[in-house]
Length: 154
Image (cartoon, rainbow, N blue to C red):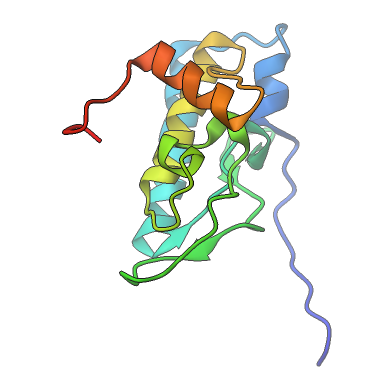
C-alpha cells in the first residue's frame, strides 16, 4: 500500500465567503452558532492534544444546513511535551497570536484561541479585525487596539 486517500464531507462554502457576502445577514444567533461549533471542534482537537495552528475563516467550512466544521489540518501538530519546539511561522498573520509574532517556539492552545477571537470579531465586524501588513505592523495594531500588556500580564 503506497497510496493514502482522505475522504471528507462535502461542505458548500466557508466562513470567509459568508463574512464577505453582504447579502447574507448574520444575526446574533448565527454568530453564536458559528462560535459554538468552532469552539466545540477546537475543544475536541485540544482534548486530543492537537493544535490546529491555521484557524482562519476560510478553514471553517459550512454546509447547506449551516453546520460548521474545521478544515485544513496541514499545519496541525500534536502538543503536550514540555520541551517540544515548534516553528513560529504558522497561522495566517491576521489570526496569529502575539507570542507567535514575537517568535515563540514553545506554545500551546492559546495560539488557536487567539485565532478564534479574531475570527469572532471578524464575524461581527464583517471585515478582518486586525489586518496587519507585516509581523511588526500586526503587533503594533494589536497593541494599539487592545493595549500593550504589562510585564506581569505577559
